[in-house]
Structure formats: structure tokens, C-alpha cells
Image (tube, rainbow, N blue to C red):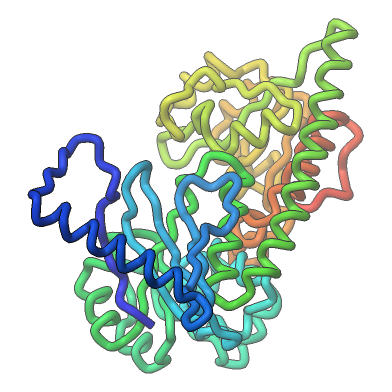
Length: 387
């Protein structure tokens, strides 16, 4: 595997590049040689590079050639890093430092190649848990508390982390020096659910299963768009009857702060596509806004449905945390739906694991809830009604 190369985009509008006459002459010579090379295509064949189809993501790209694949991590007009490796049928051994990364590998049926994770209490996949119990997969600690010697003893081909800072840290540099490739994945920056899900192509390329990743994403995309279409038709039918879409409240207090997703966020997009009207959709610029409970009450007290209430599993638990939650209309009417149906005893939640790669299943749940909230008490993938 080759070393990660960091570079700025060649297309930088803020910098003018000047060429001297000798440089221009050199370019003409190279072009002439290239033309000659093409004229001899019966003797030699050049490797053809082409961009792999990326439809929704704005954070990564794939360039394919006959023998290699190049992964690109993109930030607007800059390429933050690139990683070129040979195509192979052998899946590399991997340490993941986030459940989301494991979720994509689970969808690709590549759990056996996950030899290390950060903290097993965060995970819900039964195959991974069995591997952990059999000591085939080990805990190595979170990025800030990484057990470096344990990582080195496992000799992984790749470590996938959450941020660029880890690569530049002492631990990250030592892993690179020992020949272990460190890659950071920032799919959490994607606002659209299908953009986050499309990162399965990133993991498919990394593990030699790009065709499978393409197939999975195509199915997810088609399912998601069909559900969104049906929800839009239902919204139009409600308007024709003089009825409004249900108002939706999300999240709950964390400590003394209610972190409200903005109107341009992943959560807001899911609510919109499922046929709901998000209470804070006007907060467009940022993904998350810190608010007090009083602020949220003032703006969303009359929300029809409340979703994503942290770790709460019942109405009584919510009241034990803060009796003021009883002031919300959704609490009074019992329209409370949390995304922890597939949560294990340690708090590992499939919603935050493979759910990121299956937003169609999440959207189906929300569409069902928003359409008939009083009739829903079973049949959901990730959500459950709190009693």
C-alpha cells in the first residue's frame, strides 16, 4: 500500500500560475511524445483512468484504472488526501474506530476482516459480538485513548478513524511508520441521507467489493426515492383536504443543553422526505444549534410528534430526567418515537451502525409514523413507541 499524499486542488482560483517560455516548450515536447505514443497503440496500451459514478456525496471520489483504485477525500475544491492501491480480491484486515464504519462493512458481509474496534459496548451486530467473545476481534480503545501496542500486535492493514487530527498525532504517525495505513472517514459531514449511504462505495473499493457496494447503494437509493415520492403524494393529499403535515420535534436535553439539528441537517432531510414539517427547519446555516429547554418549549411546544429522545426507553424515564418535558403536546398525547428499538444492553444501537447505510429503512419507519402515528406500535425497523 502506498503512502497517503496530501495536496491542494490544481484548480485554485486565488492563485495565478505563470509559465516561462522554456516551460511552454517542454509542454509542447511532451504533447508530441504523447501523440507518438498513441500512434503506437498496437505495441503498447496505456492504462485508462476514469471517475467512478458518485451521485450524492460531496466528500469523496473514486478513480479507477486497470490495476489500481484511487480514493479521494474532498473538501469543496480541495483534495484533503488521496490513497492509491492495487485492485485485489483479498480483503485487508481492518481496525474501525467508529460503529458507522463497521456498519458499512457489515452490509458488505466483511465482519470477519474487522480485527479491532474502539469499544464493543457501542456495537450491536451479532456476528461482531460473537467474534469479540471468541477473541477474534479485540477492543483497542477510542482515538484519544488508543492502546497503541495492542493495535501494533494485531498488525492490521488499515485503521479507519474519524478525523484528520488522529493521522497527524503521535499515534497516527507511528502506525504509518510501521506500515499500517491510517484513513479518516468524514461521512458525517454529508447532509443528505443518500450522500452518507453512498460511502458504502468507499468501503467497497477499500475491501475489493466495489461492484457489490454499487449494487447495494442502487437498491437503497431506489427504495429511498420511492418512499420520498409516496410521502410527497400523501402531503399533497393532506393539503387538498385542508390539513397540514405533522410538526416534528427532534432530540432532547443533553446535560443542560438541547442540541437542535438545523434545517439543512441529516435529520431535517429525513423528516422532510418522510412527509413531516420540522419545527426548526428555518435554522438553515448550521447543522446543530445549542438551545435551552425553555427556548425549545417556546418554539416547539405544539409539535405533533417527538422523535430521537437520546437513550430514553419510556415516558417515565423522560419525566424522571426533567418534569418540564410534560409540557410538550407530543408528550401529553403519547406521540413519542425513539430510534433505539435495536439497542442492546450496553447501548449499542443498530440505528447508528448499519442504519447510516440503510436510510431507506429509516425513511420507511418515519413515513409510517408520520402518516398514522396513533396506529403504530409495531412493524418498525429502528423505532419504537414509548409508553
